[in-house]
Image (cartoon, rainbow, N blue to C red; front, side, top):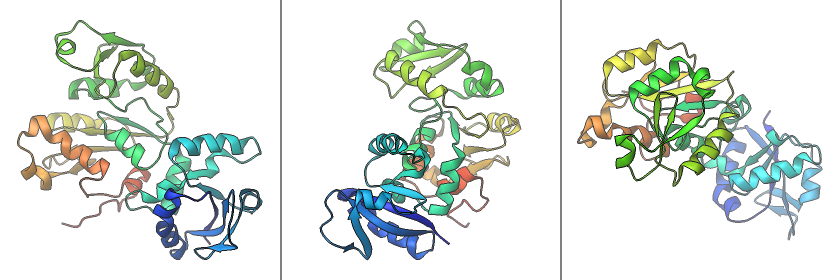
Length: 299
């Protein structure tokens, strides 16, 4: 039996994802009870009942699929909460555009409220692609291997430290973006215009960390660092490598090596490429859910 859903509002996002919704319905993952709009102009649309938004909300649904972007959906969820609808039951219709999307698998991930700890922008790209709330401050930044491994050895301790702007180091003086220290760990805040902006979002997002469900990601071109990461006691983790280092948590992207001129400098491009949809390799929802069949390829 599929989850019962109502689609709320018409427009360009509805048009973009209507076929993806139809596919999930064909798979038996969902049942569309109604499409609600401010000014319904017919009795049905695309084979579904078309009605007012109030009539749609009166249905016995499991989830609302809101035909707007993630920010608008979050605002709508807060509004629906005022009339007794749990915010977790309101999803952006845009999630249907995620790579290898499956509604049942997505619902598992959605309710897990996972926090991604990431050495670089992979966590942000992955969260954005899946329309997940940033439940970690490790987005829009990067750090080197040694600092990241040190951080992971005492993650709670470092998260209690205050982020401080780095204005004096030689590295900071060379960069066009702000840099910071978290204790003795240096952070490159490469997607922020100012340190003030970065710190405001860092402080906000670190309060969202779900310590009961962490997913820890790293990439490295160094075998020794790969083995150090593999030994860390995190239940859910992944390591991207350009070669087979023989560690259990690795995803080896060796097939993309021919595209990289400088492995030490540019391997991150492949790592981010599999997160932002430029390179196809795995199912991100299954990967985060811990499913063993997350690979999209067979060698």
